[in-house]
Image (tube, rainbow, N blue to C red; front, side):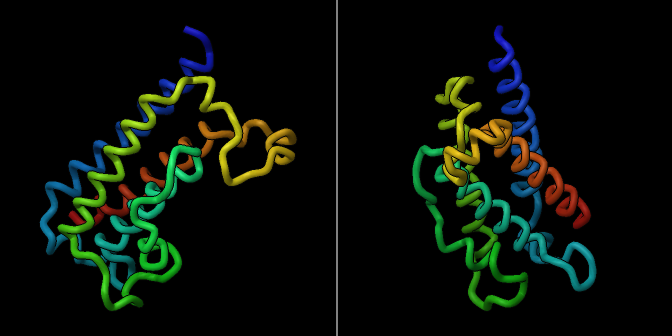
Amino acid sequence: MDQQTVLTKIALNAWQIQTDRATKFINESSDELLLKEIAPGKNRGIYLMGHLIAIHDALPEILGFGKKAYPDLGAIFITAPDKTIDKIPTVSELRDMWASVHDRLKNEFSKMPAEKWFTRHESMTDADFEKDPARNKLSVLVTRTNHLAYHFGQLRLLK
């Protein structure tokens, strides 16, 4: 197995482990639990869940295999702080979105050959990529995996 394939496999395995852990937690948590604040005056579980969906839903555009499925989530869960938007999706709706986004990503990731992970992502120019080829599609996956692990740690504080 060549080095690109090994590195890609490592990154994809880490992504899937974190995604599976967060999915299990979300699916096993009651709506009431996810509506609680992580700590007094801090984000609620539902907000972190929506935030992660919005961030992960942007991956198809960044990685070059499609558009966001839920473009409206960014304004609610990325741009606006928690508790500043009156009408947000329900926990049940977010669970469905979570499953849809992550099923799509798993399917698309499985089709991407290892060498494609080392190419330029769509949020940078060819010139920028030439200066720093380490800012590639695989690096996006690694940073999103770390981001997921960070917020999953926060969600675990609900219990």
